[in-house]
Amino acid sequence: MKKSHLLLALAGAIAFPVCAQGTVSAQQIEVMDKLLAVYVAAAKIEVKDEKGRGNVSDKPFTVEEGRRFYLVRRTWQSGDYTCSGCHTEDPKKEGKHIKTKLPLKPLAPSANPERFINANKVEANFTAHCMDLHERDCTAFEKGNLITYLKSVK
Ligand code: HEC
Image 1 (cartoon, helix red, strand yellow):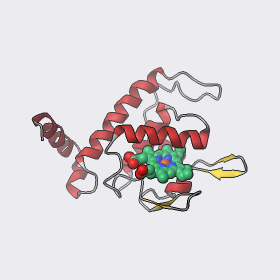
Image 2 (cartoon, rainbow, N blue to C red; image 1 turned 90 degrees about the horizontal axis):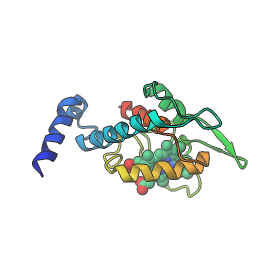
Image 3 (cartoon, rainbow, N blue to C red; image 1 turned 120 degrees about the vertical axis):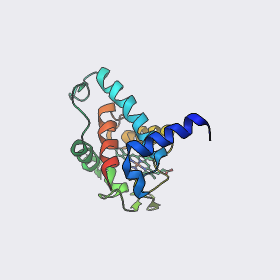
Image 4 (spheres, protein in one colour; image 1 turned 180 degrees about the vertical axis):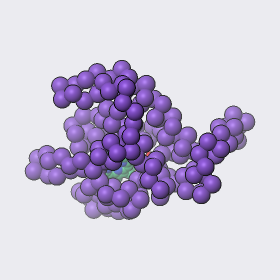
């Protein structure tokens, strides 16, 4: 391991005592915090769309807003869609893909060490699933809230 990586890992372990419980790894925290920093910056310059989404620069990301976004239902083409439709209402649980019926490993980082270890994969999934559900990518504000919520799930 490179010295700088070791330092980052150590800094993560010190800054986030949750690591001591062995549930969320320093790597997961590092990836989530990196994404959050990107979303904070992006949310500041996000332009309000026609439905008033975005441009919420001064609002901090919250667990409540992230949870609301995760559970919100959207009816589209006679289907009822939500993130929790596949990922389940409790992101610590195994989910099931609504179309393929295939089992899905938990989304919460505390319940699945393979989640949030690759920022590009997170972004790609965000974009794909937001397109599926909302026919647009999610705003930085929505993504920031969702990660804040998932980080809080113990
Ligand atoms: C139709 C089913 C389905 C819905 C609805 C869905 N997802 Fe997913 N999601 C998946 C599958 C399948 C994976 C796993 C891909 C993998 O692990 O390779 C996944 C993985 C992810 C990941 C990747 C995390 C990681 O690091 O592995 C994120 C982030 C994510 N989903 C966010 C969302 C959000 C936000 C919503 C709601 C806007 C949503 N998903 C709705 C099926 C779904």
